[in-house]
Amino acid sequence: MAVELQKRSAYAVAQKRFDEAADVLGLSEDERRLLRDVKRELTVHFPVRHEDGSVHLYTGFRVHHNINRGPAKGGLRYSPDLTLDLVKALAMLMTWKCAVVRIPFGGAKGGVVVDPRALTRGELEHVTRRYATEIALLLGPERDIPAPDLGTTPEVMAWIMDTMSMHAGHSVTASVTGKPVDVGGSEGRQEAAGRGVTYLTLEALKYLQVTEQPATVAVQGFGQVGRSAARLLHEAGLMVVAVSDSRGGVYNPTGLDLDALEEHRRFRGQISGFKKADDISNAELLELPVTVLVPAAIEDQITEQNAPRIRARLITEAANAAVTPEADAILADRDVFLIPDILANSGGVIVSYFEWVQDLQEFFWEEEEINTKLHHLITRAFYEVLHTSVNRRLDMRRAAYVLAVQRVANATNVRGIYP
Ligand code: NAD
Image (cartoon, rainbow, N blue to C red; front, top):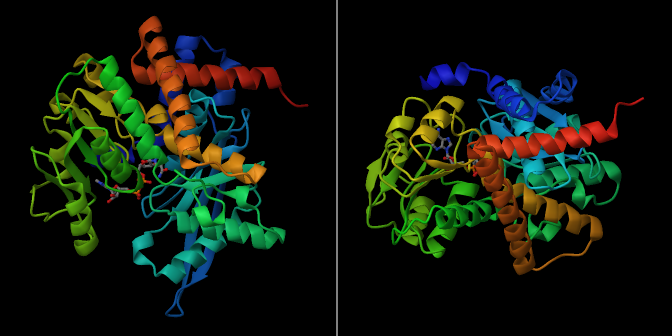
């Protein structure tokens, strides 16, 4: 089934979700045509010489879905499984994400078909600088501002910013976000997506009047988002009982010692084999009896196959498209509360927005100010989505889409059609 789902077009799924929102809003055929396709899609093929002297040809993408609310914004993914279809789907998701939290960006996504772990650091830098040069015709602080995503890091962002700056002849720090603080990055950006996941989870537990003490959490994916979410949820008083990476996970129903686990991961390069917990598979992690499930890895993890067996009360969908449309329906029937991806992981793009604003102003804020502003924007969005969900009798995902699509449709209508 997982294989079948992979073959299904991610873009078709994204369009289906859009169509549902367009139906609720009663958008006209013209409005639908303008919003359900991407604005531009660039595919580049470029050579990179590896350290052994061999030349390899790489493929990269950069897609803009809609830029009527502001410059294009979205992450860069380095993955051997990357396709144009997936990039288009993720670019569309970015448009709705920026709209649902009311930040003035349009949606974009990009990346390179590559396994970054198979390259040396020097090769990765060459792939990155050449890819940035190939897509540079789209980039710029007023036009398109990339950020990290799966398989990319603050260092990769620094190389892109430096490449853009070399071309311009001066530093253009606002050309990417998610950079190290030393080169114009923002305090709090590294853990922003995980912090947003935490704020939203706490708000939802309050709304759901969950009284379990402590509420338990399982996190799938122990990368940039999953790690900070696990740590911050633990700091907020929840008990993290399971985490995983691509090789498998660990489970301890009495709570994981996250510091010891980090130590083990540093030493072993993986989560599995941690002595103070039992090894489990990723599939088992998703079905654990926990209060909160945070899928923070990749797409299509909760499907019609395993949705009937999910035992969490709340799912905070940190990874984009982790839950399929079929699973959405099953979870809604079973009264599992879902914070949908476009809201759940929006902390990343919110603090990216703050980083861009700080770079443009060349005036930097303290982390406390950033976290306070993040909390304000994301909590406001949570209650706007929740009210829409309750008032219009829609599940949380449909409610988030309805709000977002309405805002983008309004911007598109008010701008009119050039010429
Ligand atoms: P990352 O590369 O830092 O970490 C990904 C984690 O998932 C790793 O632990 C990896 O081992 C694990 N993983 C990969 N394939 C897996 C599989 N098949 N099963 C289980 N685990 C697997 O990536 P990230 O930046 O943390 O991104 C994770 C998700 O969050 C993605 O969907 C991304 O689009 C989304 N997201 C990230 C950000 C951000 O700021 N980094 C912002 C918004 C959304």
